Image (cartoon, rainbow, N blue to C red; front, side, top):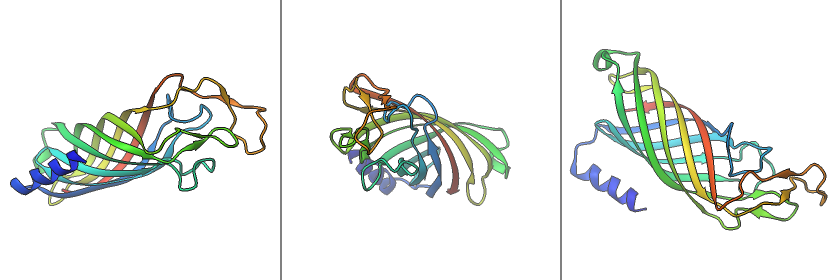
Length: 203
């Protein structure tokens, strides 16, 4: 939570552009070692933050197990902090209602919840599970004045600590292993790629 304290401190000593928020969907269509190989994380994502020039500090939440009934009772969630920075604007940015831009981001968070991979076994063994990420994205059709509203398409690479699991795992509640699938990860590091489709409102 030190990053959260730092963001609050920066906001108190400098004039911020204002509150910003974004909401949409996040999905892991490829290379997701955080879940068994027959499933992909998909769900809604919401972020609220404060803009300071080209920088945005955000608190974000995502519901990663929205379409998976075989997760822990409360589901699998990600709660984290992200720092995003604009790195390029098209020449008409200051006076356009359909501007374009590229951004980069990085952050850290916790995954809360577990996946059911055997009739009685949940992974990861412990929850919450620390995670770090970096990402890039493209903003399109952005209104820049009086508010900064528009769409974002982003790519996120996440790394989290996992368990070493080499055995065949069952996604079944029957107690049998017929048709089981092998977990994607074979080390203590789990990697995942996410695609994010978001709508931005605010400043």
